[in-house]
Amino acid sequence: MHAPNPLSKVTTGQVFAIAGPAMVANLTTPLIGIVSTTAVGRLGDATLLGGVALASVLFDCMFWLFGFLRMSTVAFTAQSLGAGETQEWRAILVRGFMVAAAIGAALIVLQLPLATGLLALMGGSEGVTHVARTYFLIRIWSAPLVLANLSCSAG
Image 1 (cartoon, rainbow, N blue to C red):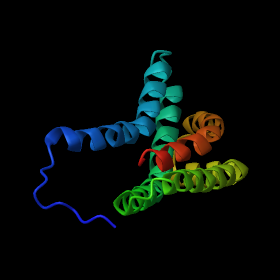
Image 2: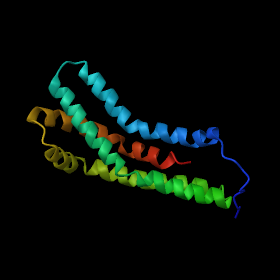
Image 3: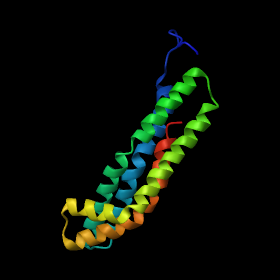
Image 4: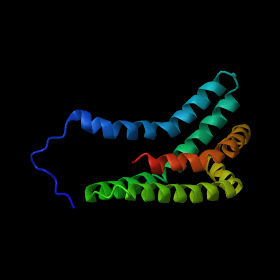
C-alpha cells in the first residue's frame, strides 16, 4: 500500500481534472428534462409542457435515489487506486454495470405500476397526467444507460 506524500501539493487543475467529469455527469439527467421541456414548450400547448415537466421531475428524483451507484464506485475506485491495484478498476466497472443493468431492468419491468403510483402522488390534472404518463413510459427505457452512466462516472 502506498502512503500519501505529505509534501505533495494538490493543484486546482488536478482537482478540476477529477471534479469536472463528475460535474458534467451530474448535469446529464436534469439536462434531458430541460431539453425535452424546451422542445415541447415550442408546441404552445400548456398540457404538453406540464406533462413533460411533471415526468422530468419524477425522473430527476428517481434517478437521484440511485446516486449510491456513483458513490460506491468512487469509493471502491479510490481504494483500488490507493492500493495500486489497477486491475481492480475493470472489476469495479463491470460490477457497477451489472447493478445498473439489474436496477434498470427492474424499473422497465415495473414501469406501469411506477407510472401509475408516482403520477397519482403528483396530483396533476387529467390531461397533464396523461402526457406525463406517455413521456414516463418512453423515457423509462433510458434507465439502464442512465444508471450505467452513474456507475462509470467515478472512474
